[in-house]
Image (cartoon, rainbow, N blue to C red):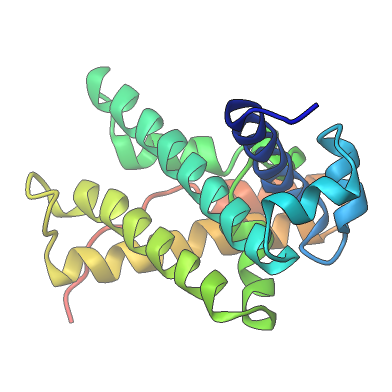
Length: 198
């Protein structure tokens, strides 16, 4: 029986969603097409009906992961603002948490995949650039005040520092074997960045 377009779209979305988590957990080269399709409950042959190549899936799944990042980050920022708390401090606490440390498959795609991006094609680099622009806008809006559409240059620089600090701290905390050291690494970087003069 031929599959309907709706079923095909649902299957494709399942593969992309599964790949977004699998790549964060295992890296782009840590899982092959067979493992990705098995995880989605589909055959290897179905892959080539849906995707041009693994690189094409990598770019699409990473875009999905980064969109999930943005949604999660915005939810934390909005919840903190609604509660009258410091949104950026809340974001730091949430991002540099033990729960995030323990679950890379559900967490930040920058911390798990950015180091691998240079080994892949230009489409993936474009996905990361677009994701970074969106994330810097989210953080910069908190540093730069009310003008969320165009935070100032100082706010953008501070946002770059803050993002680098959070992602780097999470990566290094995951790299060590000692859980106590990992927790200290996270705690040392929870204070949010503020704008600085030249």
